[in-house]
Image 1 (cartoon, one colour):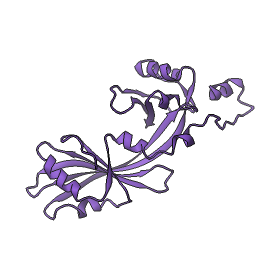
Image 2 (image 1 turned 180 degrees about the horizontal axis):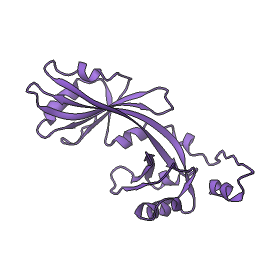
Image 3 (image 1 turned 60 degrees about the horizontal axis):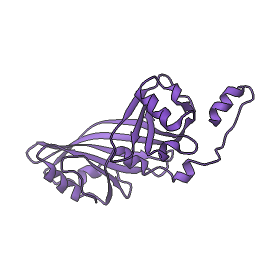
Image 4 (image 1 turned 90 degrees about the vertical axis):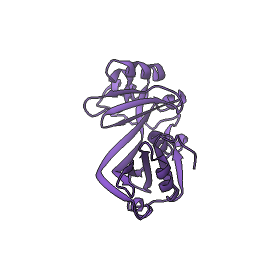
Length: 222
């Protein structure tokens, strides 16, 4: 397991599937795990058919009509925009509201369109870990991730130690099953996507409706 920043979140992707009660079972007997709400969300990744976004060192994803454009790990910057209504497919830079997001995306894809390349469904259950004194030592998320339409779910845990309790949280982590450490949740989710070759093909599979006219067909190709 890679060492993380002592005060930063611990993002762990388990090698095997586990149920969330495991978060309670592995805790020291005097500790308490307090559960809160569970939420479900979809994360859609986007790129041109030939992967211009990825080649430029960025990732583009959306959830609940909120689009986020981020550079590769270690580089600064994040561009976020809301797209009203159900996002069409494909989307060109000009389909987004005027602003820094639109300008940045246009600089990457020019007149091309981005298409939905992969979807991840995520169920997140919030919980807190309390120590023997009843003090909260960490706030956390238990995540069940479906990277392939509901098949082969993966489980993950995100733990944010509260100030002064990083050591206690590390002891808790040491009791967990084998897991991969990740720097960000987005980077962890991307690691579950299919191989790049399967996502971005140089010869996209396109279908056209003769009733739609020329403009939609050109839009899809570009």
